[in-house]
Amino acid sequence: MWYGVSNIAARMLTYLLTPYLAYTLTGETGRYIIGQYGYIYTLFPIMNVLYTYGMETTFFRYSKTEDNKALYNTQTSAMLFTTLLFSLCLFLFRDSVAAFAQLGEHTEYVGWCAAIIGLDALSALPFAKLRNDNRPRVYALTKVVGIVIFVVTIVFLFSFGDNMAAAGGAFARWYHYHYGIGFILFANVLQAAVTLLLLFKGWKEYKPRIDTALLKKVLLYGFPILIAGFAGQINDTLNRVMFMELSPATDTENVKAIGSFTMALRLAVLINLVIQAFKMAAEPFFFSIAQDKDARPTYARVMKWFVIVMALMFLNVTLYMDIWRLFIGEHTQAIHLVPVMLLSYIFLGIYYNLTVWYKLTDRTYFGTYIMVIGSVVTIVFNWLLIPVWGYNACAWGTLLCYAVMMLLSFMWGQKYYPIPYEVPKMGRYLGVMLLLYAIQAGISKVVDVPVLRIATGTVLFGAYLFYILKQEKQELRKFPVIGKFIK
Image 1: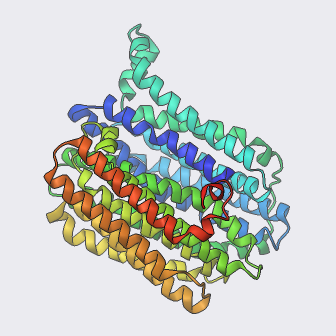
Image 2: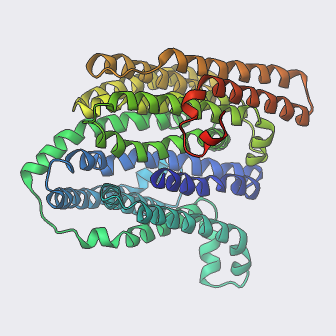
Image 3: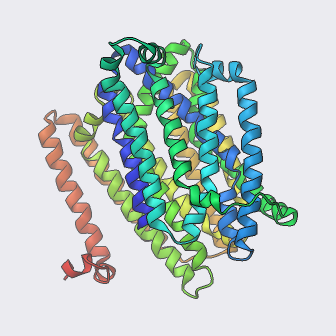
């Protein structure tokens, strides 16, 4: 709960920037800045995979079998070297990188981006160590403090910086030169630096030593995770890079379109927030119970309730779209894609649950196969359809990609590490979810009164809750707190 809730809290604080930026950055200029924000932060996860190259998962894997001090020192030493190397490369090629990232004349932003990615990478293992040492409160506090600094800095610069700049001087010149994406990147540099400082204890315990045999072992284990991570980020983010290259419109119009698509994704990202938090809490949990006799039934039970929660979140957004659309203000050009992206993230979340089989059996290369196949689906689909379908192809390509990955992982997993998933029941839960959404979508086409649409959405949401209650009554009675109210 500490890991999951802290990650949700941290990401929710960032998510609350969505309405703030939507109502602060308006008009064509605002759309362009939001587009830059969406595009640059599409590239960040790809670089994060390169900088960390599977070291977190590898740390959890070998912390149970190797000397933890030697493992931590070896991995941290390797990451220090590679972080400096990658950051130097970005700095040396900053002109080309700035042009590719649509940063214009602001080549200095490449250095800022390198600082953000590098500092985040150097924080990865100290965070993993906190999780491994069972120190969730320190982990949670550090995460949340960093995000608070990020959010507060952005709000301060956009809302109050103008008044300070009116006095002239060095700040005024800095303010006007960096207005827009520069404010967001600056806030992120500050966040990453403070976060690393708060993890000082983890660095205090570090000794610059490398066990070459151990390093070889962790690199061999982590390499498939690196490839799978690259492929995963390609599946999630390459569509926007391809959109910039394949859309026939001008670069400026394409950036604005990415801004609209990004805002639609912000509504769908509610599910992704829970998925990411779930991953943080579930990965060490799955490893910790792997030797228990009831491990496989437990994995199946976790999957079932994960699907239920995802379905409730899907309906929470789609049935109340009249409310959620207020979060993105005037940036509603791509709002019709929100249900598609929500369903995509559900498939992605199910896939993450399914990956337990190849991590526990040391068959991480299967993760690579799956991710690479997903990447091929993403690339081919977007290459064929972006020129004629625009960012609609990005959303539907993501849905197809995650569906293929989910199915492949399930089929291979049941062969090498069978888990008794309640597939028919979960299929019914998702089917009823889509049916209720379709009913609400049909109602919305003929009812033009938002209050009535909200009312029908509430009835349908209540119906789904009643359905879950009837299906899971026996198990719900055993739940803490909730069980007291189930008769």
